[in-house]
Image (cartoon, rainbow, N blue to C red; front, side, top):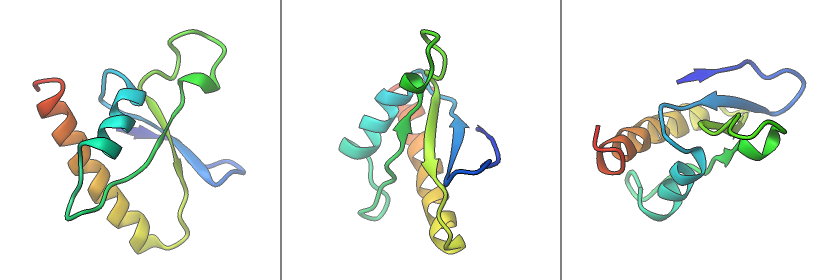
Length: 90
């Protein structure tokens, strides 16, 4: 995963190793949980005017509580592994 540093906003954009960020976001909300919890992300494709740009990117809210951010990152990592295994067959 590649992320950018926030620049004046409370969000960062992460380029994920997925086929479609919207599909991944739906998977995280409908089909995945880690100890009863999940992470909600916002797909970035509609933030661009160029078709297809941002298709694998998500917007993540920057959380001030570092432990909450670490916890969410662990959940996101597990969700990515589950998605890549069950949906992409990798």
